[in-house]
Image 1 (cartoon, rainbow, N blue to C red):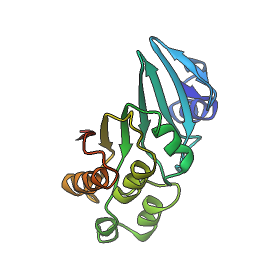
Image 2: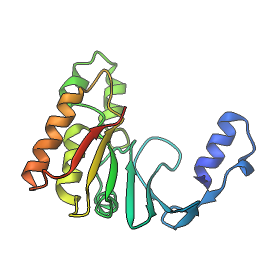
Image 3: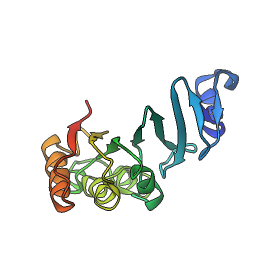
Length: 172
């Protein structure tokens, strides 16, 4: 499953026929087995990147990684979730002192790069609804983040919004 631009880019890059994909339109619901799915646009430096909402049996799963900017449009999708996976890619200090080339640091921290721990917290602070029961932090950089930093930042955010009931895990 992919939107048309992603299917074409992957097919070209991998030398496969793009007819192998089931194409969807961003913002439109489609069925995948027992799930009702929809894709929403995210800012990242690739061909028409998306996040997903999956709905089944009264539950809604949000998947958002490779997000360069914590846009309200993404937050509104997060607000629908009972379970969510959200990128918490880097700690800004660790990124700046990582020894990576400046162009790469700018790409990662830029508007089409990856969310920092603080930016992930910003989305949760503004958009976590009473429905949210479990949050997985994902896409943590091994060189530019630490699990304890991401967890501590999000737990502090949960306290700020009065939602210490949300289960928190880091996706492996």
